[in-house]
Amino acid sequence: MDFSLTEEQKIILENVRRFVREEILPLEEKLDPDATQVGPQDQERLVSKVKDMGLYGLGIPPEFGGPEIDTVTHSLIAMETSQHRAGLYAPCYGAFGGAGLAQLFEASAAQKEKYLFPTLRGEKRGFFALTEPSGGSDPARAIQTRAVREGDDWILNGAKIFISGADKADYGIVFARTAPEKGRNGITCFIVERDMPGFHVRRVVHTLRSAHYATELQFEDVRVPHDNVLGEVNQGFAVANDRLSRQRIPYAAGCLGAAIRAQEMSIDYVKLRETFGAPLATRQSVQWMIVDNEIDIRTARWAVLDAAQKADAGEPFRTEAAMAKLLASEGAGRVVDRAIQMHGGYGVTKDLPLERWYRELRIRRIGEGPSEVQRLVMARDLIGQSLH
Amino acid sequence: MSIRLEKHWKPLTLDEVDLLGRELGVYQIADEDGVVQKIGYAGGKSLFGLKSALEKEFHIREGRPHQFRCEVTMQYMSRYEELLMIHQADHHSLPPENEEDRPARLGALNPA
Image (cartoon, rainbow over all chains, first blue to last red; front, side):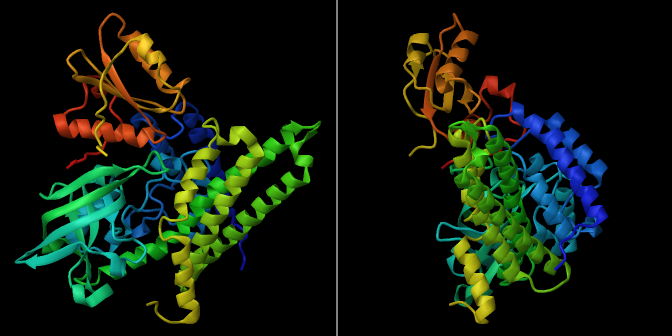
């Protein structure tokens, strides 16, 4: 494996790092420590600068207007764009755009026209609704939302939970059971519009993450046209699964950005802070924390780039993506925990970003599949049999 | 637990505000008739949490009787947006003082 950067990658990363340090960090000095939004004028300015860099729309395939960026470079960029206080869940406050709902790239021509293209132009917003009160790690069995065919429509009834952005969206991708006796081959993916009667965003689900909250949804006899089936009837699980695997690589890279910044802050701090007449950096206990941080960061970075390289080469990458997600989310959590320890009381104040990363990284061990599910995914590939 | 803020109103006076803790949280300001004029929060940058945020609200309105109620929460940002969305769902508008300073992107709830 050769992870040395090309000249082009070096230039891109230098530009992105400068953007984060010169444009994002100064803005955060004025924002609430838990903010996830900047004002419209700042947002416009940031997006314009990203467009000038040619990096707007990361994750969008070039044929749909995204930049010609491979997964390795995308991952390296994600490690940079998350190196600020809001970076885990609002990297650069959305200035780099994004693929939004990647499933729509496989949508029908009419669906693309109605949902994908307006989303890419920033005119519409969507949400992804898979998890239910009955569970999220095993969607094939946990999905209880039902859809029943009635003429040219489907009637949806059920509930979803931990759904980000549904209250601010125009439509969403919703998974429902259409053939209860068929298990994972009985789930269909629907595009549900927010103003369809019977669709309700019932409440905000408050979590450790104060901003960028999740919501709880209810579907009461929501009538969805058959034209809004995404993919094939009863094949929705494949649509969900594809997203879950692909999403893990940039998700893991994002965790690492916060860890890298926490490590930089720690190294700067322990050189300055003195106890008993000498800098913290001279204490072996502190040196070991710095070393353990570096081991966690480098291990996870190699795993992320390995998964990204395999994805770019068109090779199977499910095990590698699961390993990267597990190593990065757990490793970054440990790094930030040690960074807080080295910073002492200041580490847990809202004066520094460490406490926010600490809270949000705890969620990253669960979001997009908890560590235990990542291990199950790897076990299935290694042992070579389906899970029961 | 109700998702609406349903505590009893207290008069917005310095004596009442002085009794508050210094925690972070959310609050509502109403006129004498109990009509909500503003939903606000005491976030991570507030000097003394709810106490200093409500002192500031008192001084802005000095001489005009108002009421307040508040809720201590570390999830002040999501709770603040939730209260705005609930108000919008119940009244089809934001409180007058929030209309002037709308969040860049506010969602919509349909609370049961």
